[in-house]
Image (cartoon, rainbow over all chains, first blue to last red; front, side, top):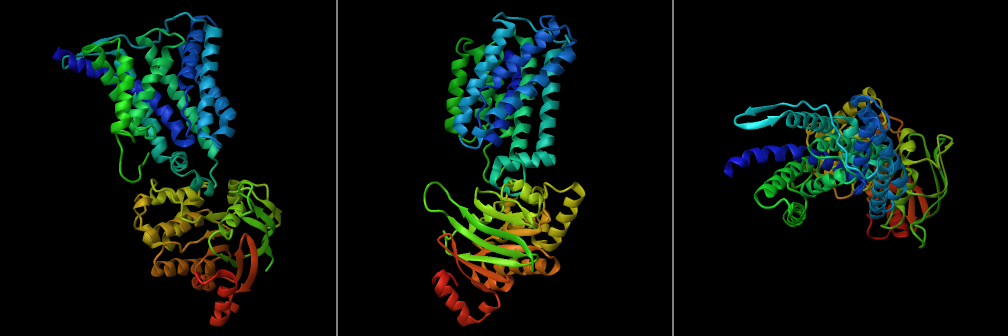
Length: 293
Length: 243
């Protein structure tokens, strides 16, 4: 059984990269607008269905690339709409705006059911189908696609956050919104940036998780539960923490499913969240003093 | 001096209680330094926040002839009204340079770069630590960064809220020397909130004394250079706690 360990860790890391994409979206929104966005999974699920509908002939018969582009534009529009509606609440009550996102999640799920039905569908994305052996480890085209897309996406996000004026504004608003306002920053425009970026991360994560399973109304929302756990383990306010949390959740879930029980993997996940909250209340990358992102 | 900033019947209320600021009126001329003095709770910081658009207020605020009463904070920053808040309010997790970039967020990249260079020349103490996270700076350096961040915005009116708070006397002197230098080299107008009367008199032209959200007296700095007059002002308006 020990021979299974490295392949399990590898595939857990690959899935973990996707959890990290979902978790980064949740953390970006929480850091700057202090809202836990419970609509994240259902909105990402709706956009994954949009790709299916636009490319399968159900709605249109577009190319895969055009369908993804349109789905991303739809994700941007939905994120813009949700934030526009809840923004008056964001500055009054974090709790009320968080609860409002639950409502938007249900609306997104309802729209998905209404337009695409309750059937389980297969979303066949043009992911390279090959497998190579690297030091005895089987690496598939899917693994490499996820790794490259996740690394490029997360790398680009970290460059924007760490080295651009917009990134400075995002970090300032996350740490001290009053200071940011004193400097003449438009808090809402930075919130829009976070919400839209999170929605795009959600689309990318959803599209990459679907090839491992089928697409149903609950597929992406369930995936986002793992992303939520990753965010909690990372401290919910740390972008590097979300990345580490995602990979930890991916690896731990894989090991638990294989060595213990697949039936209790969700229970294990919830237990992991509770343990993480007790041992690392500020996340696994908790630091003393200030933090960069 | 013409009325560069004109405050008329400014009132600020938090909740249903007594207003924190009650129908306050005063003017500031171009290049003038006006100080607001008073004990804790007198309404000084509320006036500053109202002028900078950070707290809702009634009354009229006119800046360079324009009624800016309904404008948000960022629109006021764009017009050159910059607030340096009490307690510094720098962003500890950002580097010194990033804090300065934040100060010049509305400027063009080239203007911002020039202004940052000017500020680093003015405050060599923080120039040496430009890539250090701001929370690692000493209290005096953090205050210099807070003022510097305000100056990067190229203000026409600087609202300085208790710049001496929590600083050792030597650092207070250093900070006020820099402010005097800025004043000498530009026509920057300053509204200064302070509890330290001695250093305030060195810098300002005119002083307003506040109590319970109202202006209860005013004086010129020249009048208060006389020790007896200064003591009389302290006794009349500020109480023994302020010296």
